[in-house]
Length: 57
Image (cartoon, rainbow, N blue to C red; front, side, top):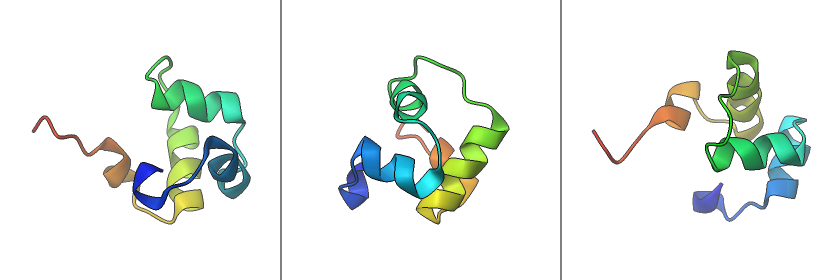
């Protein structure tokens, strides 16, 4: 999201996920399901693996 300067609302529209689901996932307040992660990846047109990339490798 931040790399593309997308708002939570824009990601919600692209993915079909609620804004609260996206916000909770971003803030690590929830453990998203595989289905949620697939919707995020598809909506953002990225691989699901890239959602798990971390600076702490």
